[in-house]
Length: 75
Image 1 (tube, one colour):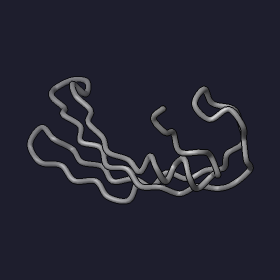
Image 2: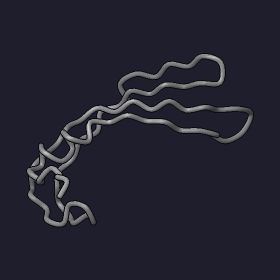
Image 3: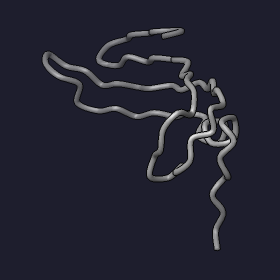
């Protein structure tokens, strides 16, 4: 977690995601052993109980290209 900001019923979290491509995934079937590091921002709506809404934006292109996966193309 890089940053956490709260105001009223909203919480904004900016995070860094990192790891290594070490296993299969339905959209990325071959592990490459390469590392990745990307950022994401999530906006959460909270009340007296559980989180009622989550919206997020992340660097999906970086998440594909850094480990060496092919970027999906339209046919």
